[in-house]
Length: 182
Image 1: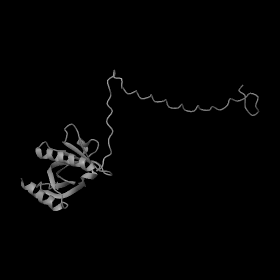
Image 2: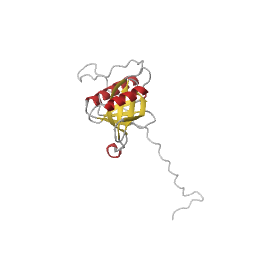
Image 3: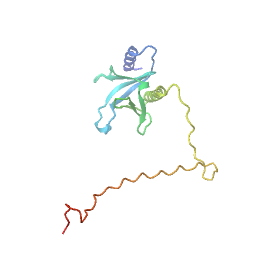
Image 4: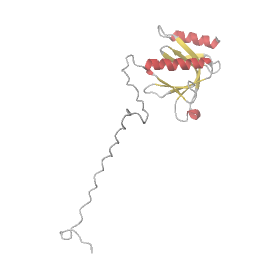
């Protein structure tokens, strides 16, 4: 364990809720998700920590790279967490209602992999309702020659035709006040 890891451990232990335990930590590039993220995104190299209840981010000192202060503490049951990009678990989007998504870009080391797994698993477990309704079995299409092939759904009916535009009546030749073209 390096000195920075010890400092981070002490800082995290001082801010944990009673009964909360630290599961994984690593360094991550942190930014807000937006269009042209790779080009315009403001990124910070922070310490990311996952506990059994929360995601914590700690800023690092500019010159010393020591953990300085906690900049984010989000409860996992309020976050929507998803792995984005081609490498599963490498870029993780953490979204909370009313805020822009936070993007964590992790390294390829074992600590980053552990953090990604814990974060994705814990967030899914926290987001799942305690009592779930029974889920109907998925529709399984049968082979074309089978006698129990379900009938094709009825074709949708065409939308109703728009009402015909009413044209003004043609002028009558014998009516007074209507000029007759010469």
